[in-house]
Amino acid sequence: MPRTTTKSKTKTTRTTARTRTTRSAKTILPPQPKPRKPRAKKVSRLSPEELFARTQAKAYELFEQRGCVNGRDFDDWLEAEKIVLAEA
Image 1 (cartoon, rainbow, N blue to C red):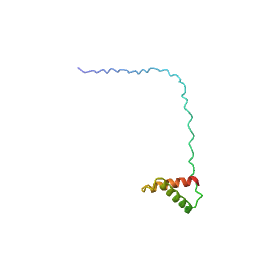
Image 2: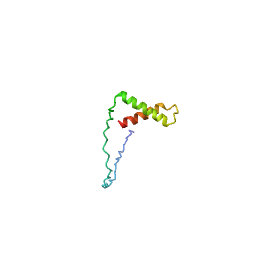
Image 3: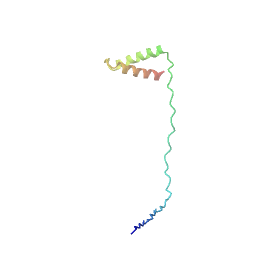
Image 4: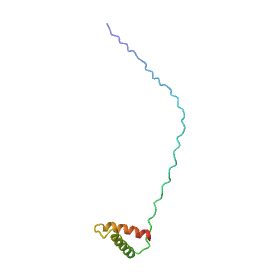
């Protein structure tokens, strides 16, 4: 007796539910600040020798204001240089 095979084909159907989309109100963002251009450093009108002399005098003045305590000479120099360049 010969065998007979029957294949049953099953049909798969996909159903997708339609979703209703609604337009929502646009979100208003605050205005973004404009990017700033980098500022050019002020060019000192003092000669290097004059800048050195004024910075040296100002650093000594700061040293005296602190009570002539040693150990902060570099900080005094940098602060003096800032002050001198701001005044120039």
